[in-house]
Image 1 (cartoon, rainbow, N blue to C red):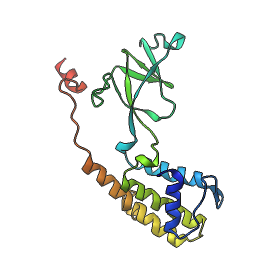
Image 2 (cartoon, helix red, strand yellow; image 1 turned 135 degrees about the vertical axis):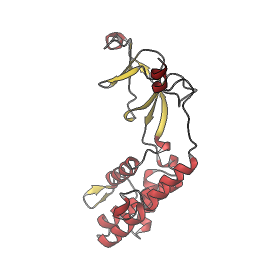
Image 3 (cartoon, one colour; image 1 turned 120 degrees about the vertical axis):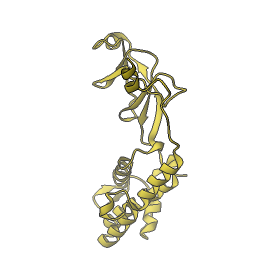
Image 4 (spheres, helix red, strand yellow; image 1 turned 180 degrees about the horizontal axis):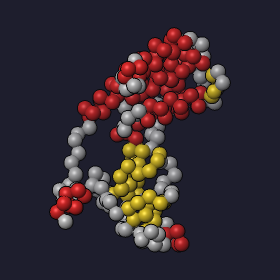
Amino acid sequence: MLDPITIVQRAAMRIGEELPSSMADVVGEDSIELVFNDVVDFCLDLHPWDFTRELRSLSRLAGPEGGRVLGYPFAYQLPTDVIGEPLRVVQDHSEPDVPYFRWTMHGPYILAADEPLYAVFNVRPPPIRWPGAFRNAVVLAIAAELALSMASNESLRADLRRDAYGPPSDDFRGGAIGVAIRNQAFRTPAKKMSPGLDPFSSAWRG
């Protein structure tokens, strides 16, 4: 099963160290869970990964919070398990690539002119959903941190970080993570906006 502890154990195997038995195990001054989360979050921040995006139904607020605010008749609550603001709001879930523009953020809420609405968000997917190239990069990156905290081997850490991210000149987008970025580009077809829904063209036409 591809769960967080399995990923960490694979990383420990790369440096020939004893396999942790739990995410609560402590290496150096940090728990395995903290090391795992820090590395994964960093790798997720390096690129707009397709596998982190999910289309979610937005829950409309009722009562006073759901009244007209700033001229908008509807207010929606953001899901609690997403990362950041929506990447895109859509009105038809069957066409998730067609954006809806009559909305704005207001604190933790989305204000909009219509209902129902859906939105594309970034999420933190479990390892089972990671593409193989991204998973390999994360294993190398975690192994680099474990090389320092478990084996006190700064040279090995530097080598593994180079394997994971490439040399400093690559700005953390080379090595194994660079392979994952290129693989996504190969797998992802170009997406076109539906005719007539381009806001710039609409404004030009009047």
